Image (tube, rainbow, N blue to C red; front, side):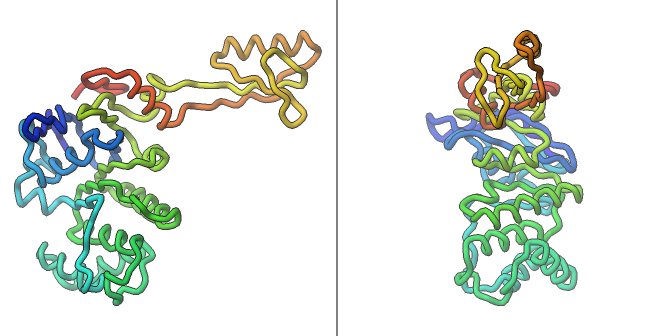
Length: 300
């Protein structure tokens, strides 16, 4: 559904994006993460046809990003999404439905179904009198008014309270389950980790690593084993009546078991702890490599 090839964006001597390449399949959720200034938003805007790349190309649903046909298949949500504050949610969404030539009856049904799913009440209240969370829900509904195949969301939960954030993340999962293809950026890596099938990690305009979460974790993460014994063993701490030793290999787990047996005790529990996506991201950033590492996928 999405095919980005060597997207590059220059502003004079400054290179915002050096060469973003990735594909996203139908129904897949693809996350783009990185620090501020990494090139995430610029990449998303080039995909959405809002910025012309200096070089490279992209297609969405088989259409070039500058075509009208592509825009009819796309829903875009920018990080900052000013609304027409004198309008109500219903009049605002009707306005955009008309721009997309959506049949009024279809638009009305789609609008109310989407706002129901987003749990948005007060649909006749002026947008200027609504909270940021309510406005964000209306902006999400706007991105869906044309029933697009592909959604590009830039920080969809930015600045929202935890309850509204959960609504937005759960709704994004629901859209993917319905077959929508979704690309989004987020600073909260927990959200990315919870719903993304694959991620691209950007730093200083480069995609420095790309792959599915499990493969990235295998490549850049760490596995720690929390071994609980009934007796004290070297490097253990007392925890709830037992002793805990944290090790990083199965060989060390076996050493702990043998030490416990030698002291007249035993291992009562072993718990595995994987690195979080945030830890993986920090490890990738620390590697400081140029060029993309394709982890668990082909270099396409």
